[in-house]
Length: 347
Image (cartoon, rainbow, N blue to C red):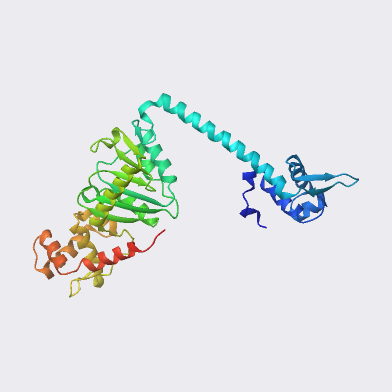
């Protein structure tokens, strides 16, 4: 047996004692040195493990000039040990209930089973970290200005646990500073998905569809936040997120090398990959500086792509370029491919 597959700590035994017991039950009896050799430990360590097993009534010492040890019948001996552990856990559960009642008595409306009210500057980032690192399968994120700086900035630097799916929607007007781009890039770099939209109703983070964090005052996020645990309210907030997500435009923040002069020139069909990417970002309201920062190209290069597209389309204004590019289907292929990739199972 592989000790790594057996949670001996649940029985109260340390891993070494558990490993020694596994070897001991397979023989009639053994002395200290034989157990040390079988378990790959020193004789002194084997001696301590055997004594621990004897104290737990899992092994018996057989007297003699060279003491030997024999395992007790595992089912009744381990069964009795587990029964004692269950009784201990039951007492701990009772203690948790008493502590919770005492905490709620002094906290009043600040902490309940349904909603937590976080008011201090230290509480919000600390609780955000707890909820984020405790998430096991999904984090949903709506981001819009004003952004909280200071203590919460460090909280934003906390990454999701590997394997946790993260989907974020940013409001285009707020997706212009280096901090928001860096935060979004960190999330997508961990396998997350990003979309942009012109308007987001509220800042929101949902953790495992079990808890939601949102500001008390929409225009003053630093003034405090709510942590919602009510299943009905969380379900409604998930529906809100999915509605915003469905209308938002997919964006890739994958780093790319600068294209060559030949590649950068607009193709005859007007559907150069980089140009379509720039036009799609422009269509959702992103500024040239932000597009340049995301794609790691110069602002002048962004403007040149837009200008070339306008010449091909016969459009003079950015609005006309976006409308005509959409009508020509230049934006759909890439957006659809991104949506198709996002629809693949990710858990």
